[in-house]
Amino acid sequence: MSDTSAFVEQAILVHVNFSQHHNSEDLGELRLLVSSAGVNAVQEVTTNRSAPDAKFFVGSGKAQDIADLVEQTGATLVIFNHALSPAQTRNLERLCLARVIDRTTLILDIFAQRARTFEGKLQVELAQLQHLASRLVRGWDSLDRQKGGIGLRGPGETQLETDRRLLRERVKALQNRLAKLEKQRDQGRRARLRAEVPVVSVVGYTNAGKSTLFNRITRADVYAADQLFATLDPTLRKLPLKGVGDIVLADTVGFIRHLPHDLVAAFKSTLQETRDADLQLHVVDISDARRDDNMQQVAAVLQEIDADAIPQLLVYNKIDLLGQAARIEYNEFNLPVAVYLSAFTGEGIALLQQAITQLLSERYIDVELNLPPQQAMWRARFHQQHCIAGEQFDADGYCQLKLRLSESFWQRCLKQSNGVLENCVVSAPVI
Image (cartoon, rainbow, N blue to C red; front, side):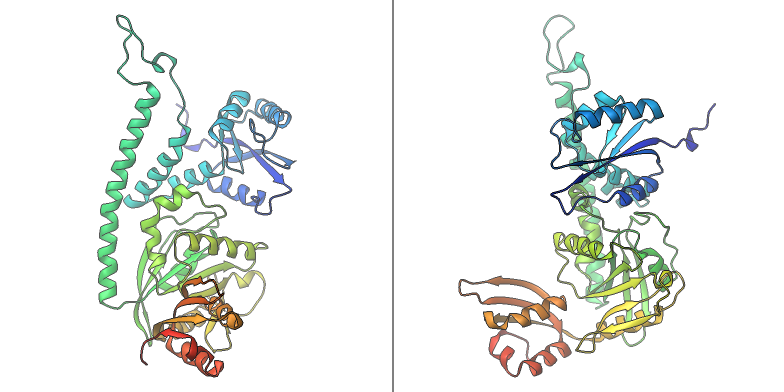
């Protein structure tokens, strides 16, 4: 008998450069995703287009080239670094005589491999079924329509309808089970709120070093590796901090460009830890050439899950790869805004704990302002400090701001504005 456990699937990677799209996917990131999935890339195909082809996404000529490569290399899988429609997937599979998957399906497969907890496995299955729902096609000609005659009458519904009904029932069952687990999470969350235990959530782009940092601070044994989505299941650990007391540190799944909406929807309960945190540690791989773009992608996902108003501390990781020294970066109000460290060597960990202590020691208050257009500089400053919980503009250009910020920061702003902000206050607690 042959050992199938050592089987590694051979794949052809396809990447299209779109001249009119600035947010196109990165080929290097596709290689990392493929490696994380345990797939061996035998060939890469790149091409330039102004827009996707409706039938094959890459055009008929390039599609035939891919089919020829499949035959030459014996590859069993074609992976596109883009989102394919169900019709494009079917057309490519018929031409290439091999399985064709897109970027979303690849990410879902990696998540399925990484899930360890019961909740994580349910969330991944839900995301996969929701993604599959739009891709169900007729599979059996003998059951694709209701038939009459002796021995030929169907079950009352077509095979496709049966598949869709079974899928809907499974999705509903998964949603119900996840809802129960979410209630359990809420109970734990409410207990922490009653005990006034601060929650610090570790967020960032995938493979930025979040789990390595988490292990270094908490002495936990969370799986950490140099691969995308090494961590999937959230992990909570209690951590004593001098001057603050016990805090809860939450390690979360890494974000990525164009994170599939099915995943965001399925992992809502897991990401709740990020939304309800008192402070976010945004871990950034400082050695990554695309770190600025990665930071923007993380900010976009945080906005999508309504977690962009949480106070944030930037943690620039992997300084050992650049030969930099550990340090804390402060703003004009003497509050930490960034910490430079190496989670791998441990350099700068004490500085990170110092910065967290200083930020959590601050008392946070809620303030509502009505800023006139000529005071837009204050709105920009509040945005820089990630303390805006809500904002809207009226017809006259006035901006109604809802702020959640530290008491000391608010007092400094009042002093620096020379009475301007006091005149703009709609409501604020008496200090």
